[in-house]
Image 1 (tube, helix red, strand yellow):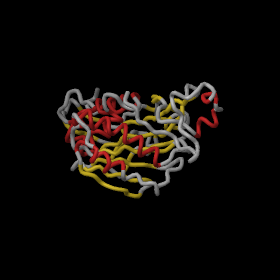
Image 2 (cartoon, rainbow, N blue to C red):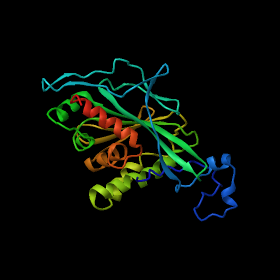
Image 3 (cartoon, rainbow, N blue to C red):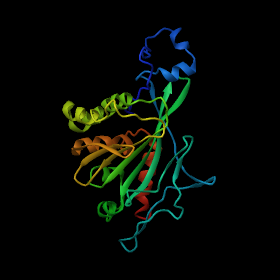
Image 4 (cartoon, rainbow, N blue to C red):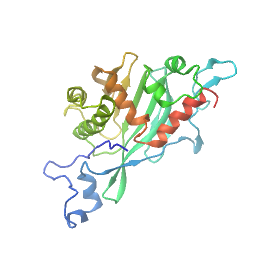
Length: 272
């Protein structure tokens, strides 16, 4: 799994952990470790489920009539409650921007020196109803790649869980993770494109626990980024959009369970 390198913020005078540090330095208390963690910590995989009043609901949001071969209804689940991500105290609305439906939720985790896992942020994957209809009607076995490679309007909604994360950590994390996917799909680096994206995350922006980041692709392959409802930039690039979506629902996702949830919901459109 490609690492989404999100080092945690630390006091200015605290040096980052290095894999070559001495055993003595690695004996630092868990509290201090949580403050100073290097970009070399390993990625983890989280799980997420629908919850409402203690009950668990599957992420099946749509109804498609295979026998009629036509789109019959595209509506929220019978239970419209938000999807709560287990263990994070975060919740995702079933509908975003009036037309985008929630397809899956997940958690981005980091392992700290083998001591504990830190939930960095939770995320939800949303896709536009009408766009899904156009792309998936007629497909016998819809896959995640069908929407990654299309022009379906999609939003990845991130909600910060780890209270000591700073914007510089987000910026450096995207430099590594998005950069690796650009190389994957482009065959080489595109440092100019990557810089255009990561430079949107300026030091002036604060992201305390609970902050919301939206990464939204529109029908023209324009990636629009916002932090807590404030637009911070838009970049037209099919390569950039695909690289970011691949991190969450592609072959090597941050959270495999979230990818499976999206896949299962796409399959449910065909009555599978």
